[in-house]
Image (cartoon, rainbow, N blue to C red; front, side, top):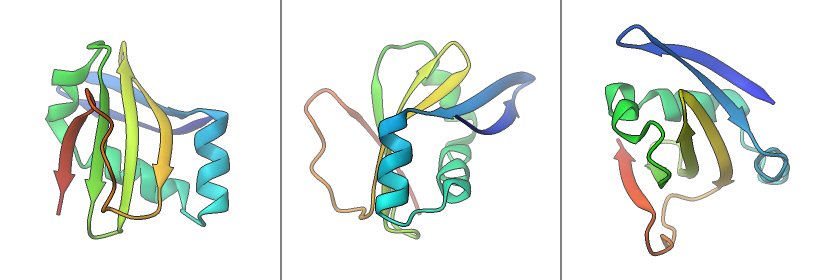
Length: 99
């Protein structure tokens, strides 16, 4: 499902979710628009992860959530969303924090 679209340095990005992520957002009463804003909060840093094959955990303490993503050819795929910012990060997952 498409959550949002945005541009960074003249490159268009799409934010899409897995079925698993949609279920978790619904179960945890997390607004998909907030998830989109958290991802957009990475701003130009998203370019560093484009097509890297890495999972990135974005911790947003302001919304007290963690969003796990992968960026595949200008498409941000939301893998899951956790309803707290204090989480255990799986080994090999990169970490970004947003105030």
